[in-house]
Image (cartoon, rainbow, N blue to C red; front, side, top):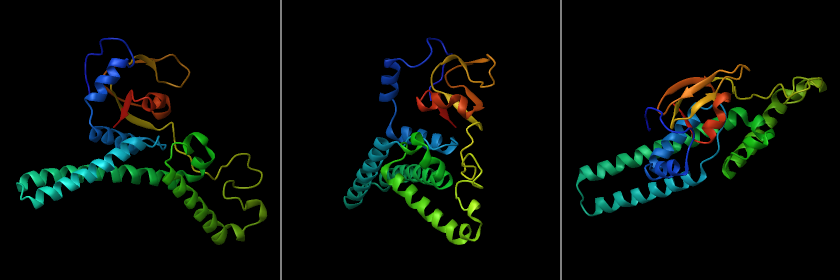
Length: 225
């Protein structure tokens, strides 16, 4: 991560984006996406291109290791390549597993929220649909069929409920730990209604409510840690 005194203008310039891009590897990007996904209370946008590139790199590295072993390459070199493969595999699998766990936990909420549903990959959407159908079937067979008609919804406690009060939702007002990637200037990060702007400098770490910094995370100006 970059650090500095915070001098300059707030936000990202085109040159800042370019310099960040060329100085960041896919391994760094995958680690960042993994950390953000692990720490965010809601499911984030699926990093389709990054995941595809990571899979291709893993396959290429595995082929390289096989070639090294056939040619009698130095065992230390082979070991270093294998460590790199294992690290990337761990990050990729943990990233995907974390997303599936969130889908299982918030599947009904994700399904009814268009913005969240479009964040899923096609495979994740299929998984969510299958999980929802399985949960509905389980609830109907084990519980709902034994209850009075007014309590047979898997979304509401009763027919008089105005909202889907049985649907679990992520706690967006939870506190998260975040780090600024660039000097962002003075920003309002308190949703209490009071004007309490916070001077956010590059590399600084803050404990803030997730919903107050959500746009900054989505635009890559903040990283969760």
